[in-house]
Image (cartoon, rainbow, N blue to C red; front, top):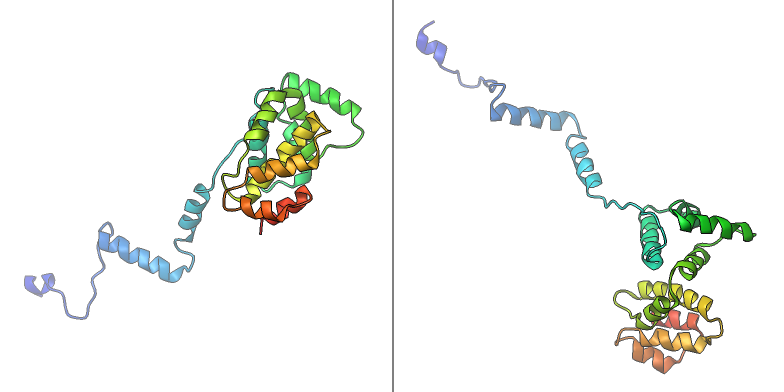
Length: 204
């Protein structure tokens, strides 16, 4: 065999690419994809999981109770926490004077608290009356109607704990006043008789 014959390649004979060459890497990758139908899915799962939002629940030591309670709700919804566990988990994040007060308060409560009751007593004890009234009076619909109804109902419970003599018509009027301009005229015409009816009509 001559040198020319040794260096030549016959037609129809495929040469194996060098191990470290790009062609070799590409061909091995294609072979893997053909043999393994799940090839590449693991990388996709890792990227997806890394994109999930992460949120840690902070402790509460008595400052800004409304802000802490809002963060709690976001944390519970993000983690799909059952509603009946919200108070139990939230109370684990009370510290210092708040923890001592809550333990003493629960000694006088014969039944377990619902989340709205828990929020109300926390705000009543550590939030100032002026802050609650100011936030209620300034509340307006900025996003969707569901979010506005939720915040209004929460603040309404706090207002009721401060003054239980406020009539329902006061809350109906306040609710309608805070609605967006494209919804407000409709409810003024409908004149809902109860706050729950006003909530439902605003969602139409």
